[in-house]
Image (tube, rainbow, N blue to C red; front, side, top):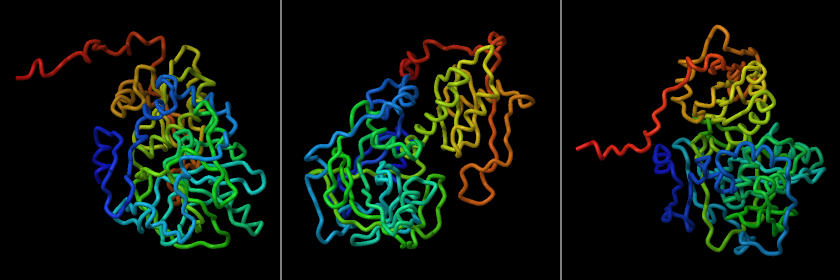
Length: 409
């Protein structure tokens, strides 16, 4: 509740030092702003999208170290996850405490390529966790391959991960890409890793906590309900079992919590989805910025529209950038794509319904409930360049200098 109130404003990171029943502090809302992502990577805000798009291909080799902060404390005997971690119930109807900011890393059973993904994880008791994962998610594909070979998947749940790994876990890079190497590319230097203590994996050396174990084969258990990112509950369903073999952590760890569907969750997810849109649309127009106000199933693309800009091609490229994208709004560079009011202003004043709609009926996007999110649509809320004098916005250049206290009694 306190975190949700903080997210309504001023939407800053928040730390809880006295959590009932817990021995470690809890932090949340750490990555709720794009400025936090830019600062963590040392990238100017104005260059964030093009930098992330460029660095995706500039992978860095791993830097393996002999000792690491995340292994200052090691637990391998009589593991009781509920004692080691704060027991956080995120929504009133959730089926118990969950790890909500855990990034699972695992190696492809055949190629050895690393995958990183966010997976909600239900704390059951002892060394027993339940993990939401399934194909087409890459970790789910790894597990399907391993089961066909009669094996489980050694995996590690990373809590308090380096920011670049958070982006990798949120990304849509191809399954053949090694996401630990991509994380190094995004941070501009190799990701520091250390051998896990109980499984054949390398884990981030500078994380806060690592839970090691195996996603076991041929076992599914009831998991849920859980209040998910679309602000609705996912009902109880059969999901995978993770047996813990070790927990390692810093001497003074901080436990990271993300509330699904709130600014921190949506910021991390939309950032990487918007990178895909940026790469696609940049082939047809100069992109100034991209935002996803409200949710992640659509976006707003701010472009410098020229006389020869092929708006239909740009709109289609945005819709095709990833499967979940069901609507796009194209706006001029004078519109803030992160401000829903500004976007609605552009739709009201610049969108022409007779010719500004690109519609693809029958295309399936994100689907949790059968028959929903079918079709894709883009709106052109830009003005033609030759009409710029008629659409030029009023400017109030000294607005930021006004101090209301100088005028109010």
